[in-house]
Length: 77
Image 1 (cartoon, helix red, strand yellow):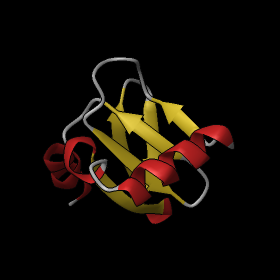
Image 2 (cartoon, helix red, strand yellow):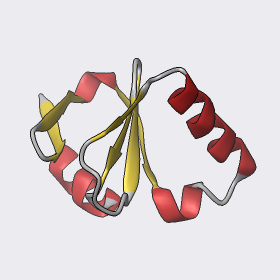
Image 3 (cartoon, helix red, strand yellow):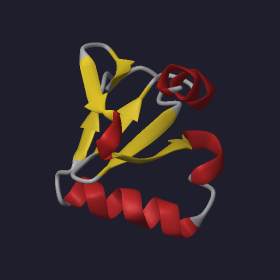
Image 4 (cartoon, helix red, strand yellow):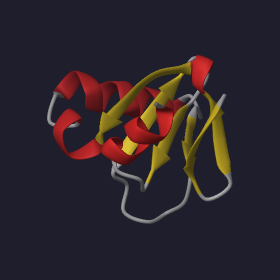
């Protein structure tokens, strides 16, 4: 099964490790450091450049999405 995370981007649900809210999770320094390292390693993929609301961590990449975490969780079920 695939999860549509915005624009033309689909992610296999088996590959998803977590879906995180951008506002609440980036308060933690460890999360910010993780995202900076992923960006440096060129593993961050922006679904589009609208206001980011969440990021989806997979086994290979981090997708930054403009879709709310609640919406993605409903789509995943």
